[in-house]
Image 1 (cartoon, rainbow, N blue to C red):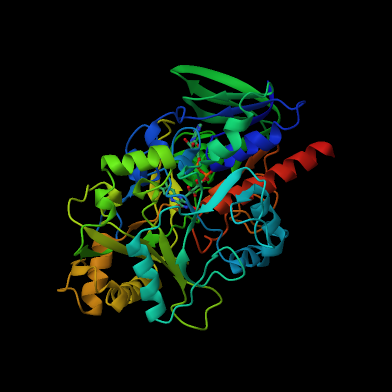
Image 2: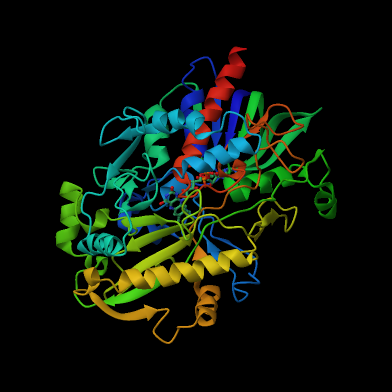
Length: 524
Ligand SMILES: Cc1cc2nc3c(=O)[nH]c(=O)nc-3n(C[C@H](O)[C@H](O)[C@H](O)COP(=O)(O)OP(=O)(O)OC[C@H]3O[C@@H](n4cnc5c(N)ncnc54)[C@H](O)[C@@H]3O)c2cc1C
């Protein structure tokens, strides 16, 4: 029996394991379906896509997407200590102040920007020092890129030619504009949330970490979550939780585990012969994700990240923590409003000084660069549902991308802007032929066809156990599952709406805030 059982050692789970075990009187068990994060590639920023489809990836796939030429999209999701922060692209972005004020306006008191800012700062060790927007001394290193590429600088010059404002801090006073991304790295190497929060406290006597331990059911008794069943290295086991179970399995697997445990829409559970513990129709609904598009050009000079694998660059990385192997590919970017009247940017641009195609799995021999216009505030929503009552069978992922016409139009607009950037004088010394979509794709209809054939996830699914007060909310404002005692969901799934930016920092903030709720409740 433990005081707390945490399910999933990803971004949120590592934060909770650290904060809850800080009280030596509290016993904490952290269960992770994947293994230890002991492979060297994990630390090499440029190699992040080499981790895809391997032991650190759940290797999920969507259902065929009706509005994306019936393609099944590949969704990498982190598996193992650190979860998705172990395989992600390390961009540190919090989203827009408006995102959190919107959460508060939806009825989630205490989640407005002014309320959450301190939790972002608490988690942060900002290399540039402290200021009203940034913290120092927190567990997670946030820093500037050590060896930004000359092509990324050209991209930023191109944005200035288009009149976009320069922005040296997307997480500061204003998000709008173009600049380099800050990264979750330390001395040029990945700094995952496991590195930041878990490793420094692994020796605590009151913290037990179980790897290769997949939870298959949350056990409830009389309206209270009392324990979990899990399979650890092939053996089925059960453990009890005296105070709380914290579900941190991410936006795909948290709703899946609730459904397997009998918490979800009655009709769905009955369809799979799962005894109904609680009829909670919102479980798995409200799935939102950022959709991105590659716009790629050949580069006339042999300078791109395609030559990062030389012995010289390897030595520079190993000895100095510098050079192209420290690149996270998407080095620079921009946040842009497609129309001036908007409250916040609705398009994000990512720029990579290399061909980044098919999730980086195609090894580029040729030199090129890629612009990635991305939908920041998609209107399309989907769901996660059961495919089977076998806990080892993957759930059905139905993001229903582009079901809202607005999303398609915005990606067409994003393509137009990406082409304008590539045509800027700043790229004259580098720009070869347009490879994707290619010069034959001109009309709005042709570009829309290209979007349907080539759009891919930017890896940010959220919202499937949403926080709120309406009938479709799964958790309340303190992230407690509505209708079950002793159970909270703490991860990307609780977001009511997707923030306008990358999602790792927002999950850190959520977990820091949840840790405070839990500690305060224990003290009551
Ligand atoms: C390829 C990729 C690139 C990304 N790039 C960026 C980026 O550059 N910047 C950014 O801000 N965000 C990025 N993200 C998104 C960001 O990393 C995630 O939003 C964030 O890590 C989600 O945190 P989480 O705690 O919700 O889930 P996760 O970190 O995914 O953690 C869930 C954990 O639960 C475990 N688990 C699941 N089911 C069970 C079970 N039944 N039993 C036990 N354990 C279980 C999983 O194995 C995993 O370790 C990226 C994500 C990916 C996949």
